[in-house]
Every structure is written in C-alpha cells, then in structure tokens.
Length: 122
Image (cartoon, rainbow, N blue to C red; front, side, top):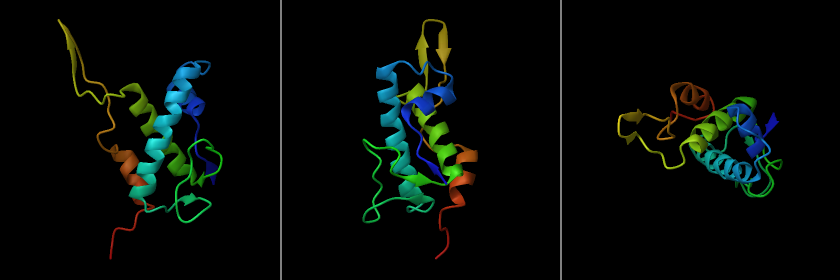
C-alpha cells in the first residue's frame, strides 16, 4: 500500500518544476479531484481511509492509503488534468493547432487498472 500522491509528486512525475508553490497547490487540487473520482468509480476499494467510509484527503494527503496501482492512476490522471485544466478539446490560433490531452474519461490503461478494483457483476 502507498500514500496518495501530493502535488509535488504529480509535478515530478510530469517533469514540471517542483519549487513553484502556486503550481504545487493547483496540483494538490487536481489530485484531490481525481482521487475522489477514483474512489467513487471503485466504490472505495483499494483505499484505506479513516472514518465512516468517506474519502478524506483534503489538507492531509498522507491520511489515506491506496493500492500502488491506484496511486499510479492518480498520478497520471492528475497530471493530465493539470496540463489542461479547462479540458479544451482543441486550441487554435491562426495556423497553430493543438489537441491537448484531457480528463474527459479514463485512458484505456487507467480503466484496465481501475476495473481490477471495481465490482462489475451483481
């Protein structure tokens, strides 16, 4: 088991400067949002959280312990979300055109990983 990643962990994973406090705080918010989505997707499986079956990671990311596979998904999805916070599908300016990654859904590898923790039959 591993702890939920922090903003600086996401920045390091994405190759971004870790000494930027504002970017680190923004990354923490993306980690929180992604972790909550994963917790909901897996019905809390793969998480060890204190309390009444609630995910409590805000303001203390070391409280929650997750499976290493879920930690990896949090890192990749939070980095993708951080790189495109508006979730723009296409950016164009004159002859410049870009199709940035977005967190519209889980990637195929993330889905395969998360489905190991999700109950899919009645």
